[in-house]
Image (cartoon, rainbow, N blue to C red; front, side, top):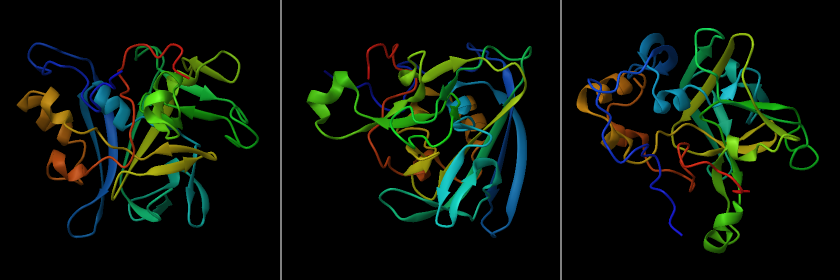
Length: 245
């Protein structure tokens, strides 16, 4: 069995002139080279890559830091986040977007109930957006990956009892965090990840669209500046993840 190439949403390049997606407003906070914290909001195409970048966790998700859990919306560039294998790393970028019922397509949100994976895992209900992943050992890959876990799209966990897909009936703001390096972080007591667009994501975009996409990440100068992935993961746009877990 082969695992789809990570981070590349489609074998063909996305052409802005041919593919004309709706737009959405995306916000971000970042440090400029002079150390000043900046804030910007841009109207950009509602691409899966940008939806994932600005939609890892719903407002209120608690991120583990050296000082204890902090709500994702309260973290700022320069704050530090605890990681599983790399110690405490600084936040370098915070992205967010708001889904508004009646204006957006049905939102691919996933709700993981408290104690879904055991006592305190998670310790409170966790709402995840289209960019949310959790650590797991997918059944269909266990022979290949052995004891290792992979970052798995949150939607793969839905079972109708402990995890659900849902469409919000009121505006919902989602957030994601980029650290100095991609890392496994702890959210509501379970392992997730900081933001990374995926290795080679730029190969799926035409030059004009790549410029738009990169404008959402002013903390980096070029796609390669995101660095390597810290952990093997499954792509968010993989075929339906039926019987994955």
